[in-house]
Amino acid sequence: MKIKGKVVTGLGESGKFLAIDWVNRAVCEQFKFTPFCGTLNIDVEDPAIQRALKQRGSDRIASCEKGFCDALTYRGRINGRYECGVIIPLVPNYPEQILEIVAPVHLKDALSIRDGDEVELDLEV
Image (cartoon, rainbow, N blue to C red):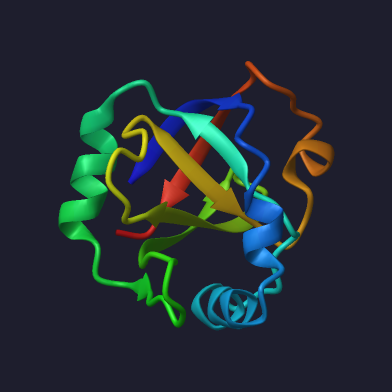
């Protein structure tokens, strides 16, 4: 599945989340790479995309601690250059037009992109 979206600034919380030992292990196991400690957020504009991914999703990271949520995951490639993973937190009121992307590199630097730039995901669904 090909998805286009624009890079947007997130809340700045993903680095702390990915630094938690059980989260980092689960992400490494799920995507087969050690993630950069942060996510790239993209706005896909159409909430139906995230809804469709949630309906098709079967791979997930299960929460190991109270106060954390499960998340659906998808493997893919961004801009045809870097393997990546999409993480969709299963929490109420999570913005349906946003996808969070993890990769083994800092994607903004590696792809020379910034907020407002368009990227393309090629997801395995």
